[in-house]
Length: 489
Image 1 (cartoon, helix red, strand yellow):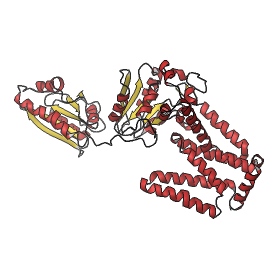
Image 2: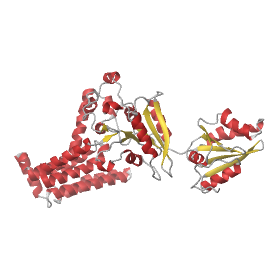
Image 3: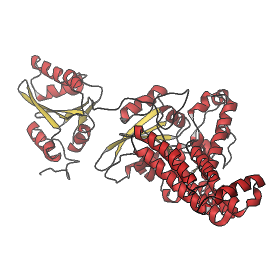
Image 4: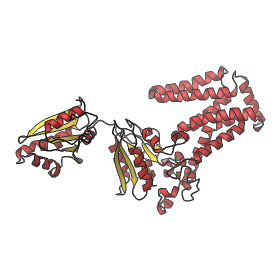
């Protein structure tokens, strides 16, 4: 049967080396990055197959070519003896796999393995000598801290695995490698602590990843949406992400499951409680009372980022008696100089804020700094002087925008909720604000991940874990307790 890319997965490797190479070329469409090196060892034809730029040339010379050439001076003159040396008697590489099918062979080739075919042998030996270019370990770009580790995940999954293993040197730490994406065959690794993880949750996550039928998996969102069946109905996510190995270790030590994806410098954490959005690693480097103060600041920042503009709009338009007389007169004087209603002003400036934020992200760093200055100073000042926006409103928007930077993990939710509260306060005053707040709260309380509410440990109330919501536990308390995921149910 003629092989092609549609019918090769389960086909067995044949006995003839030349036929195997021909089949591989047919399967891979004679791609230009397929390297085949034919050699003869004691009159036995052999072939070494690699993918260009996926293997280390220096490792290949030392670990593959030199031992093969030394076989010429031995009495191994049969295919069976040569293959026995390659698979049982040598240490050519740390990773050594016996491959029997073309499907498995092609996946290993694209993962940086070298395949060695020996004539008259109907399987091949695969050696892991990966050497593709990769970005070195750098500092975190989103989850910055002061006193904690300055290492962030890289794009290469095996590098990320080593970053986690360095921090948890215990045999109960498990790494399960699988693949997702029908065409990309992306390496996906489940990370968890055996004995702390919920086995039912683990089996469900395994099943959901195995059922992904996408052509490619290129980022965390490709996995997250399959882990949350009702994602469209939820404002907040039941899974989270981190770029810090220490935060990942902290999560799995509590019984959570993390997912590493090759090509992505972020790890997925599930389940991800709502209160975890307000946690940082700096809290565990600070005094307990200061950690509580920092946590309070973040809760206030969430309020200012989402509801404060809408509350200001509702107070000025519907309940001006709530404001101090002097403050009200100043606000009134500021609004008299503008040509637009307050509601229209607020919507316009919020949309402009989102446009400038998106532009600063997409532009190069050197240009984004200049753009931020132009947007924040020049455009803002000109808008006030021209009467399009009032000065008090510019202060409200500045406070809200600054507060949103405190919680980068909730950036998407904050942007939408801020507009929702503005519309609610603009059309219905404090009644609209109250209804909007209740709807958001109901949406949060209705979410759960494998029977674990994301509002835990507040609702249902868990006295044992509530300290992590209001501040942090002391290390002496952590020493006495052994947290497992069932504690949050």
